[in-house]
Image 1 (spheres, rainbow, N blue to C red):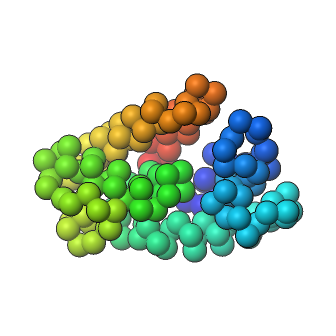
Image 2: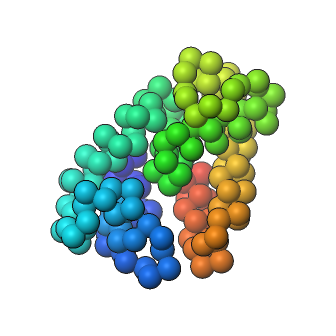
Length: 158
């Protein structure tokens, strides 16, 4: 999954003046990782993989999700932050009739609800939640097409 994100979605170094994430390399932004300020251009792919694993994959408990939805939820954790993405997951499940607290903590109830839901139905509802957030974002006018492409690519690969 990390290889897919790096190779198909994020690629290499970017420093778009309108991006409030600042410098980004392999999808790792200086805003989310200020410790990389001044060396973002030199961030290696292997270092980026380690950051993805330690900052997103493990804290978001991606390994506990059913296989069909892992890539999408992992991408959401990267894109929105782990706790915010956990809330997106919970809101999506509540739209599907579950009654979860939207607290940003993925525990046994959230995981059980994901596992009890048809993966395609979950992916469609979860992706819709993400798309709604993208459209509300102040940068949607210039970045929205790329965000939508990312979302569709992730759904296609899931």
